[in-house]
Amino acid sequence: MLDVGKWPVFALLPPEELRLIRQACVYGSAANEALYVTVNDEVFALGTNCSGCLGLGDVQSTIEPRRIDILCGKKIVSLSYGTGPHVVLATSDGEVFAWGHNGYSQLGNGTTNHGLIPALVSTNLLNKKVMEVACGSHHTIALTTDGEVFAWGYNNSGQVGSGSTANQPTPRRVSSCLQNKVVVNIGCGQLCSMAVLDNGEIYGWGYNCNGQLGLGNNGNQQTPCRIAALQGASIIQVACGYAHTLALTDEGMVYSWGANSYGQLGTGNKSNQALPTLINTEKERMVEVAACHTSHTSAARTQSGQVMMWGQCRSQAVASPHLTHFSSTDDVFACFATPAVTWHLLTVDGDDYLTVAQSLKREFDSPEISDLKFMVDGKSIHVHKALLKISTDPDIASSSTSFYEHAQTPCIRTPLAGRRKEPGWLHTLTQTRLHTHTRKHAYTHANTLTHARARALTRSHTHTQTRLHTRKHAYTRTRERAYTLAHIRAYTLAHTRAYTLAHTN
Image: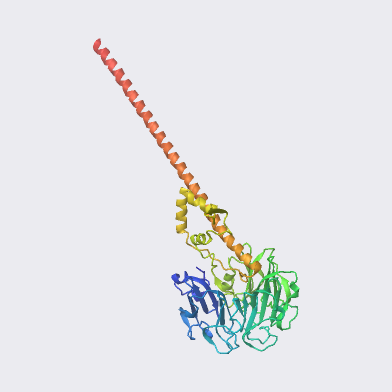
């Protein structure tokens, strides 16, 4: 299950319902709206329902979860929300659904009427497969599997990237400098948009009065502009706050720029920065950065699993990265952000949600991760040596059976934002994580094998000691009986002799 206990909006859900949650998102001006997906792919919403943002077909608030029928069975891969709020999501089929506030056409349906139920966004996207969405205050951008970016909605500062400041009522491809380039990650601040390319370059457009585009000036940009100051650095993830931006490099370094009145840039001061500035993270390699367009809070997770936070933390200004006891950047936003919304869609990773037995079934006969191959009737069967040892050793097999029967608790992990299965090196990274995950299970089974052998040896040793002890005890009793019998015989013989001599005389 997904741990959503730190968000008050879920406080009234019964434990049996909480255990079913696989994905969740908390949004709204006061973090009073939430949407979640169960393990059965049912979608529910609860909260104040401002502007119909719960997608229930009305504007009635609800303290108890209500099902969104139109989304049930859809596998959600990305979800974002605006300030209105409006909500936009992408499914595994590449479809985009939107609902909620629509005063600036941020739902992409060509009107300004609020949407009370999720509606398919189809204009210019019918033959496209969207894999990621991001929302600013009242605009939306979407990333396709082809690496194209589409945008629509509010455009007063050029955040749609159309070359003008006219609102965009339907999805329009962001071209200009992004033409013939492949985008792999996107993000939105309140009034700006960012895109990371497959070659590590990063582009920004829209509002720039606080320097949040990282261009070295404060002028708004109506089309994408490359951040030249990061030439030589390969960016793999971008995260946008209200008016500041964080970027993660492939070497684990973090750059920040933009507004800094709460210390959200992590530079140790509160001065705005119009150019990317390297954050001092005490030589720790970072693997994730986190920010949300609704707040001035920043967070990052290290390779060792430590989580740091800075910026506006419960009304305090933390100007330098502060080490926390959290294990996830999500916890930072649940406990310290204002409002306490989720910075991305919380998700139990599909692979890690499987039980041990399910993982083994999935990876059986996998040529990518097996370490032994058999040929049967001309066909290859790929297996794992560790599993063969478990199945052929009687002592281990019995203990392993018990182990598998009880190993039904899934591991939980929130996936790294910005990482996608396509294209290129991102797909390789995902495959590497899958292999590592399976090898982790193999290590667990090998560990079980070792423990089982140890238990078998212990039982054998104990049995041997018991038998020796029994034999020793029997031997001692035999000696005692022999000694007693000998003593009786000697006594009887002596007594008989004495009696005979007495009567003879």
